[in-house]
Each structure stands twice: as C-alpha cells, then as structure tokens.
Amino acid sequence: MKLKALSYYRGDKNTKFGDCILIYNMTSLIVYDCGHEKHKDEIKTFLQDKPLISVIHIVVSHDHLDHTSGICDLLDWLSEQGNYTVRVYSHQYLKHVDVILDKIDDGRRTRESLKKALLGEFDNIKNIIETAQAHNFSTTEALKGTSVGSCTIVGPTVDEFIDVAAQAVDNRASDTIGEGLEEESVMNAASVQLKCTLDNAETIILTGDATPAYLHNLDAYNIIQFPHHGQLDDGKAILNDMKEPDYKTFFISDNTGSAAKSGGSDDLVKYMVEKKYAPALNTKNGVIMIPIAGAGSVSPNKSQGVKLGGMDN
Image (cartoon, rainbow, N blue to C red; front, side, top):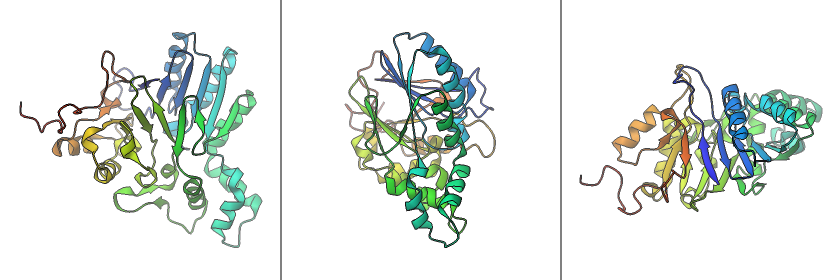
C-alpha cells in the first residue's frame, strides 16, 4: 500500500480544505476522510489515472465538516460511474442507543428522543450513510478490529465512542474528554483510527482528530499521524508519552486555512525544532507521498540513533 495525503490547492492557504488521505494499491483505494469538494475532484482525477482500481473503501473518522464535506459528492460521482464496488465505514451510534440511554440515565429521555438527538448531533455521518444506502453501497460500522481492505480499524473501543456519544447529547456533561494536554472535544475524541502496512513494510496509524487518551500502543507503529491537524497540546502529549519518539516518523495533515480558529501546526513544528525532533512531514508544505519514491524507508535517524539536529555537522 502507498499513502498520498492531499494538501492545499494553487497555494491557497486561506481556504479550510480539511483532511483527505488516500491509501492505495493497484486495484483498491481507501479514502480516509474527504473534507472539501476540491479533494473530491482530486480523487476523481486520481481514479481516472488508475483504471485498474475497482474497489473503494471510504472511512469517515468523525462528524466534523472539515473531514466530511466532500464525501456525499464523491459517493454521487462513484455511483454515476457504475463500475466501482464501494463500502463506507463510520460510527453507527443508533446500534448502541440502549447502552447510551443507560449511560445518560437522566430520567427524561426516551429511546426515541435519544435516537432523534443522536441523528441531530451526528448529522453529517447520518447524511453520508443515507447517501451511500441510496446508491446501494455497503455501509459498515467502524468497530475496532474491522478490516478495511488490507488495513484495520484499531480504535476507538466501543466504550470510548459510546462515552463520546453520551456526552455529546447530554447537556449536563462537559463537552470535552481527557485532561491536560490530552483534552479534546467530544466530537473529535473518538475519531476512527486506521492501521495500514505500507509497501516498505512500515506500519502507519491514521488518527483523525482523536484525543491522545484514546490512542493506544503508539510505540508499535513506524509512522504516526499527529491528530487534529498537528495541534500543539495533542502533539506534546503523544511525544511525551511515547518511549522512543526519536525513532518514529510523524506526519501532519494541516489544511486548516488561516482563520483564527482554524487550529494549525505552526506551534507544534516550532516545538519539535526546539526539542530537536526530526521534523514531521506536513501537508502544509505540499502533498505527502509515503513511501518516498526511491527510498527504502521514511523513518528518520534509524541508522544514526540520534535526533535530527543532535548530530555534529
């Protein structure tokens, strides 16, 4: 498998294009999020250039628009082509409505009112599932252990995403999960995490906007996506909690635009320089391709055994 993480278009760093990461081989494509119509157009061109691909897996990490805005249009286009087998993977909260109802336990909600609240809270996922079903595409619940082609969903656990759903619809509860550096909004926290093995035999984990508290066993991966577009607190929590972050490759999907509330990776990039970590691959600098053409491995510093910047030049 190869990875292609999409970037900005025509140098436009004002528009919030959101995430879109492609994992592919000769015959299949995994689309991990599609946050903008421009990404959908790029996927169309990508598929037209690779006529042997016939199977499309679409993984929806979570409900936010910067991860979902291009997906329904992409499904429409794939249906029009008539020659793709398509499966969509997402959280399906209604399957757990009774457990969520017990967890909230406020004495006010009925089963039907909770279902309505869940559909309203996670409306983008609802629209994606309905669009997929209207085109007779398969929809699969994104449970830990589920295969997505040759990749595997590794998180969150059922308990973790049920906690997120309960907090999202319970107006008595906090709208964040985790503490300190690991604090994240409930909508982001339980993003679907995907593990893939690339052509160079290295393993990568895609994390969406997940809270670091829900990212488990990160030391087992060669390449790690910093969650939430490389926000500083999330990145620091991951680097501080890992045993040997110096020997890992990190990458950031930062297509957040220039707005004040867009997030972005500049502070994390600065922090990694100060601490002499190898710089993360970053879509802010252009499209990311892994493995890098002509390279056996993208992981830095394996031969030297030291941090980049820690060597004498």
